[in-house]
Length: 204
Ligand SMILES: Nc1ncnc2c1ncn2[C@@H]1O[C@H](COP(=O)(O)OP(=O)(O)O)[C@@H](O)[C@H]1O
Ligand SMILES: Nc1ccn([C@@H]2O[C@H](COP(=O)(O)OP(=O)(O)O)[C@@H](O)[C@H]2O)c(=O)n1
Image (cartoon, rainbow, N blue to C red):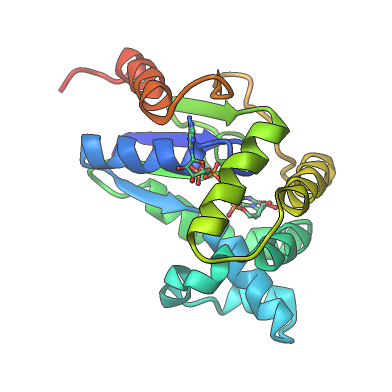
């Protein structure tokens, strides 16, 4: 089994950016597990029952640009409260984590539930207003007409729902390194994450 890096944190904290770079620089695979929940949420918006949607998800659906939409993110957070939906997605995530050659998974419950034995766990966070500003810039750059206030409201609502659900709530694992990126630029945040990984990774 390869080395697994678990990266969790709230919306737009920078966990995807860090995970992608760690994976690229280390030659590991990367799985953005939020896309699984977004794909289920999207299917629910199309009228499908969420548990059925999770059980029959196709990996090809994970690359659709429509998954970025704020309404899909909200639907994702709603379906993510359903224990049977989460259960249906466990095997896919654990199989990815176990791939030889190493894996980086980012989400909300990777260090706590999906890969509790991962040797490297990061919890990436930032102040809500900063996260909202980052996500707003990203959505505007993608051509969406959204206000920063609506993005902040979505982030706060999802934080609340994700932290307070009964099954696999968003929280830092006890053995996670907490990285607050509020006052870091992208390169500084990536470098801090890499230093931590290098400390716990056996030299190869
Ligand atoms: N440390 C940082 N400083 C400034 N912008 C950042 C930082 N980290 C990420 N971003 C930007 O913020 C947005 C959200 O980052 P992303 O990695 O997608 O967050 P997450 O995966 O936690 O939702 C992206 O547009 C990204 O380029
Ligand atoms: N491992 C995960 C990943 C995402 N999710 C849910 O899926 C939603 C969307 O996740 P995401 O990672 O794509 O969201 P962003 O952080 O990119 O905004 C979250 O608000 C969570 O409710 C989860 O419950 N568990």
